Image (cartoon, rainbow over all chains, first blue to last red; front, side, top):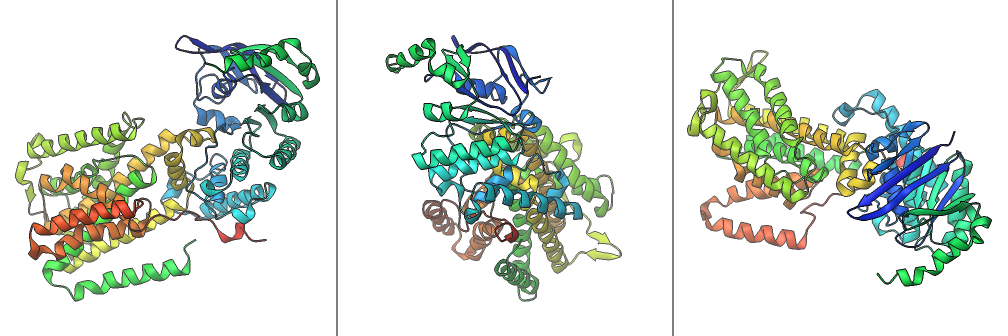
Length: 257
Length: 315
């Protein structure tokens, strides 16, 4: 059984069909890519999966459970977390506190621990901060722990966001254009990181504009154009697919509006 | 996780508050008692406004509900004061959840206007003597003093120390809040609600949590307020009072405990110091508020994040 299955998912904004009966199926442990020209509906698909949007039609099945239309925090608690195309960190807080936010659903503190600190609180708090330390070490952020997240360079902010998402211990990690705004060196590092995360047993779904990166790292790709899936297959199949090439060449004109 | 420097500051602050009433005139003890009570209310307002970032301009409602619960239960139904305290805490909690639940999803400015509306309805209800128990525009007089274990809190100094105790309790709760999962969740949802949801934070629950906790604390402050004056009246809980608490938090420094305490001092005690200048002091005071907001938009004593344990950065 696939880890995540989209069955004829349709999302409409006013008169615009942003995602048109999309069906994809993602197996556990793979790195899955979604590509397509600007405005093809890639981010909308992510927003439907993570509960930010409710699709008009279709079903989203995660680990055999229907998660269509559930609220984002419930979907996150089931094991799907994401990063954003435009980085969304808690800018005024420290790097460590940002990553700690990812521990929210794993921490077993109850509402009264915000009022009274019991022995359980100290145990739970320490466990989670130590996890934060692990993730900071994994991403090489330890020396920045006390620094303000919002004042870090772009590449670091991307890492913080990924560390935060990973700190939730997700089964499926969704990356929305993780290489956007990164330089070549940072992009290579990102490739390493993504592979490392996959080796930890996390399934990865990503959107990316950088073709080198997508072809290099993904094991399976779906191509979207105008909300519809126009092709799918292994990277080498996609690279030589005439329909895909046409969609991308047509991109120049479509940018006009 | 409090560092030594902070511990020394708080120690000094508490020491000053403990010796202060022995050097003050009766009039100033009264001012300082109200300062302690207003500090508690402002710290509770800060949970909703500063930490969770919701524009609640009706906080005097919860303060007033606590105060009136004690006064009504004591004067109308003859309860001893001590028995009224749980009601004065629980009733504001229930009211805050009922009021906030339908409007919690509203954007800042809409929430602001709605809570002002609630506050106006609240004071009108008090003035019009609803159910014949609120005493109308004059309020309720002659509330009994608090008696615990044979000790009667009747003298001015005893009520000052009662208020001081409630402030200590509030500070302890807020310290626990800001170093816990629920407290951090409030900051997260305030800074980015969508990102918070997407990492698994039930933002609606924690928004209501902020309202409930802050209403409980404000309600308790209300009890002490009633005891200080042995009376309650609608004027102490009107919309203008809510504006005062709201402003204290913004001027002092949202989410910052020393900021809110300084804000309360600046907004309430300082004007009392210049009482001889009558109305003219408010001119200087207004200008000072404007200047603070221009030069220190994050308050007199801005919040510092980075409350993380040392062991996570060491080997």
